Image 1 (tube, rainbow, N blue to C red):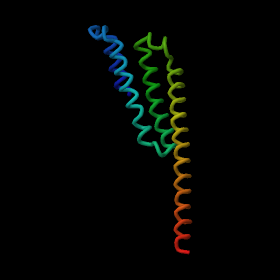
Image 2 (cartoon, one colour; image 1 turned 45 degrees about the horizontal axis):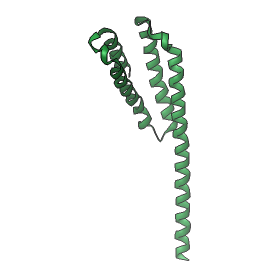
Image 3 (tube, helix red, strand yellow; image 1 turned 90 degrees about the vertical axis):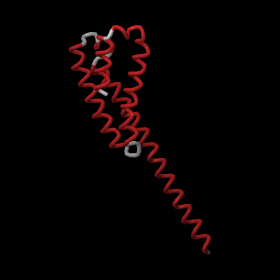
Image 4 (tube, helix red, strand yellow; image 1 turned 180 degrees about the horizontal axis):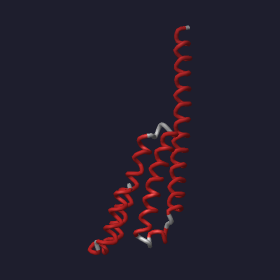
Length: 127
């Protein structure tokens, strides 16, 4: 994520030829960043604790690099400060981990219920 973001910043600020397609350039970069952020989400979808930890570590690294980039690109922090970016990212991480936990609990409860019903129907079949 950091490499894509750094590349995007340098292209946006140094390659003036692409200024006329800035909206498309920004949309493509945002989509790439979203897909990269979803890698730990998909990897740890059924392990909410690991999902929370990995996504928070990912977002912390991204936020620290963003803070460093704010020194080079002073206008960067005018829209989002590093702390605001970190807060927004961690809220998203927490929501995703919570949803993962809820789905996991429902799935395991359903599996247990189905296994219990299968055993009961199997026992009734032998009676």
